[in-house]
Length: 192
Image (cartoon, rainbow, N blue to C red; front, side, top):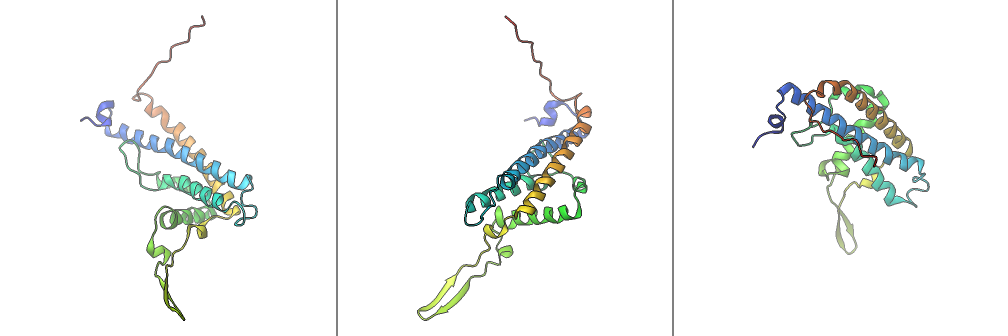
C-alpha cells in the first residue's frame, strides 16, 4: 500500500513542509476553540457564584478549554501532521503566560485527562474510629484544578496570540506548498 507521500509524489522535504502545515492548520482550530470556550466562561459570567452555581458547567468548560489549548503541544499520532507544534512557537508567550502554559500542560496530563496516582498523592488514609478503621481514598479532584477567571482570561489571550501566530506561519508556508498540493476546480454556476 502506498503512503500518502508516495501518492502525492512529493519529496521528503515537501512532505515535511506539508506535515508542518497541517499541524499549523489543526493548531489554529484548537486555539480558536480554546479561546471560544474560555471567553464563554469569562464573558458569559459563568464564574459568578461559583461553586454554588454553575459548578459542573464551569468544571466541564474549564477542562474543555485546557484540553483544546494543550492539544498542539502534546504528541499525536498520524502520518499527515507533525505530532506537535515546534517549540519556537512558545517564544510568542510572556514569562507570565509561559508559567500558565506549563501549569495547564501539567494539570491536563495529571489531573484532567489522566489519573496520575503520583500527581494525585493517591495513598489511602486509614481513619481510626470507635467502630473500627475506615479506609478513605485520597485523590486530588479535577475540581481543585480549575483556572480562576483571571487565569482563564489569560489563557484566552494566549490562545488568540498563538492562533494568530499559526495564521502567520500558514501564510509563510503556503506559497511553498501550492505547487504540489492536490487541486480541484470549481465550475461557475449557470445563471439560468
